[in-house]
Length: 260
Image 1 (cartoon, helix red, strand yellow):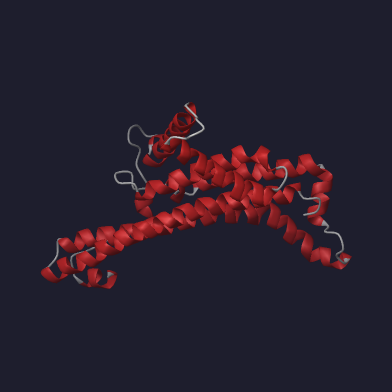
Image 2: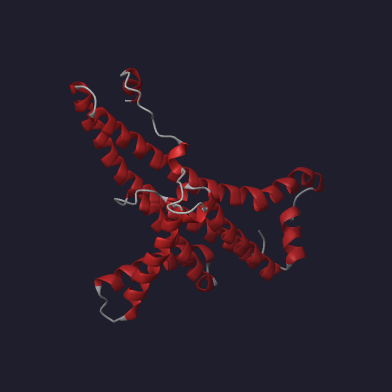
């Protein structure tokens, strides 16, 4: 498809990372850009939905109450209870907040008029990752104490001492660099790549409509791919919110374990 566009001589410019950079809606501050407003909108939508769904809770739930309880029950039972174990309840509010926040901002990518997943801007995944990073290290230090926690990371029991020369730096890098890096990059990369593909097929289809008869016919395929990819991307958005929350729960479970 892109080869045909490049060879058509009309100067089609495929989307790039520049399409993820937004000028301030007003003023000159980066705090007034579209992604920031979408994050603020997500907080408003999430708060409003769950306040309304829980305001008139009944034994026989309304549709809104049922939807809210279904999301909460999914995080509570599937992630919290199954992964963390007996102490899971005190972490459910945090895991629930992370899951719903990431999911809402991901879904913005396929919502008409909004059409931008805020997690495709690396700063937002990094911000959430830093919160998760602090939480699971704080939990581990509270459970084991700082010095025992660091000792367990650097000197795993039952390992021959010469192996520590290699294993200790690897473990330190894993706990303090690799984990947060991969947690943020996985979410960012999936949202970035998915949105970029949607832009390619959507803008490509729009461009083909302005070209010759054959190109107008090919635009139908481009738009069809864009529609199909939107449904596929919706599944990825749910999956990435789940994976991010699941890994956070796994790290908390590891922090609570007697040995990590």
